Amino acid sequence: MLEIESFKMIIYDKNKCILCGACAAESEYNGIRIIKNKIIIDEEAAEDWENIITICPVGAINWNKTAGDKNCQSSCEI
Ligand code: SF4
Image 1 (cartoon, protein in one colour):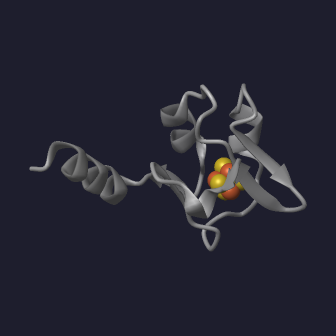
Image 2: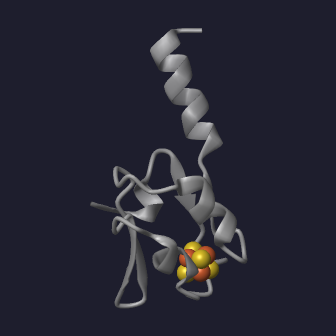
């Protein structure tokens, strides 16, 4: 389990986060939890990540499109 900041596919902006708890409430498989006012994400949990990203009212969670591109380029060597 990793803190959100170190995720490869999902990014988290703690400066935007208002700790409303909506993402954790939407999490069905403990993919997102709030522990001691910190967001903890288990990216490998079988969550509906698109839904969780959409539910954040301030856009603090999003797909890490840059990392995805880099991963794709290194995998495909394009
Ligand atoms: S839904 Fe967004 S603002 Fe609310 S706790 Fe989660 S990351 Fe923070």
